[in-house]
Amino acid sequence: MTELPIEAMPKRRRLAKPANSSRESGGGRKVSRDASSKLKIQIDFPGGARLGPGKVALLEAIDAEGSLSRAAQKIDMSYRRAWLFMQQINQAFDEVAVATPEGGHGGGPAKLTAFGRELIRHYRNIEEQAARSSAEILNWLDRHKSSRSGGSRSEEGQ
Image (cartoon, rainbow, N blue to C red; front, side, top):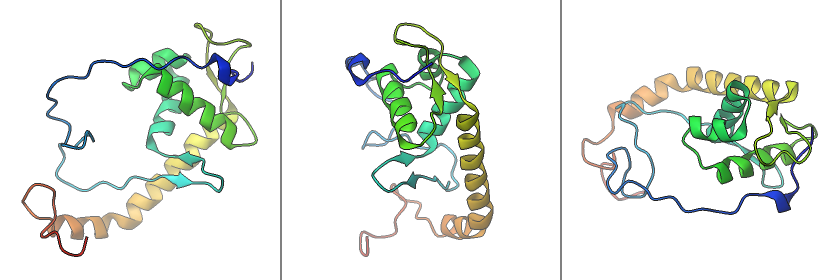
């Protein structure tokens, strides 16, 4: 199993989006229906590589589904974006997190490596520790949120 060459990357397709989604804010970002604040961890590595919730969710879905296309469908991500994420993850480290068969484009299995499982485990541990240590602060912030849309009391100081 090996990485796919960049030339094998699928071409970008534009998919129609629902006209009015109640789960999205004006900027196209998904809005949580839960009223409490959540902490999101993104690790920025020297050189520009990143690891965050989207890439980790993709790794978990690949592990569960055994296929990049099924993993992408499972987490509602385009195949192209999933493919790019997988390439970014594999290029960011000295070991690959996702192994694909030689010439894997076209339905071959995608398999999470032992390194990929460790990557997920360590990321989830960081997430859990950060959530525990910041819970009191997030509660304080929630108590001081504005009831107005956008959650800020004023535009000053932003």
